[in-house]
Length: 260
Image (cartoon, rainbow, N blue to C red; front, side, top):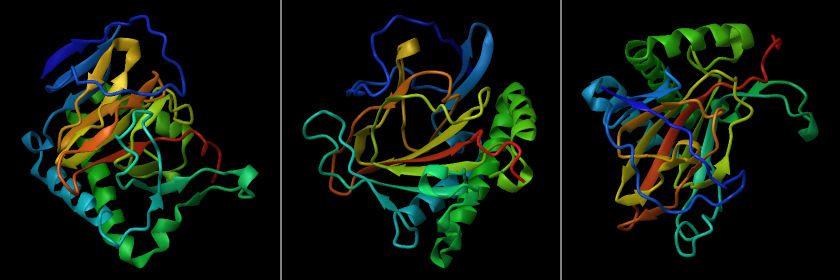
């Protein structure tokens, strides 16, 4: 796996700005470094590393797109006319949910999807997928794995963990995103983004701090510290009827420290 040294560049983008269509410039398996320190990696096709992780991603993707899994319907626009406005968009969160006093829920809990019987296959597939992704991190970037194990141990009781390294998961179907930072995440930790797609273009992760645009080809996996840099997702455009791009994401929230 080759090494890519990410170099900081100047830009004028900020939180909330539109992430416009652009082509990826990081398209091959690589380790990602910033100032000599490994911060993540990109895998173009997980099948090269593990048959099991690819099979689990397929199961999770199929279940999410079925009627078995509750979904929150979304209506995000990319800001580019005719791109994401007319395609179905939805998301599903599983795992731990932080306290939200402003919503009259001053306690941590697990997402309500866990109580839906028809979603059990999806939840099991996602949990096993998370475990397999963690094993790949351990194999490819042990420094990242060991650091995250320690950070999770310090910041999140076992009760609120999803796998060993994360607290929660979100699956985003056909959802582009304006530029933002994942400020609710545990600093120093990484996210995992696994992509499933068919007959669609776009949906690439743009990180303007490095002028980096990551490919999101089918069966790809990106390990990246989403708290660290401004990032956004480019518009998703189906090329045939029922085309889609789905991202299966695992992330560690900092809100559970001290909550037993």
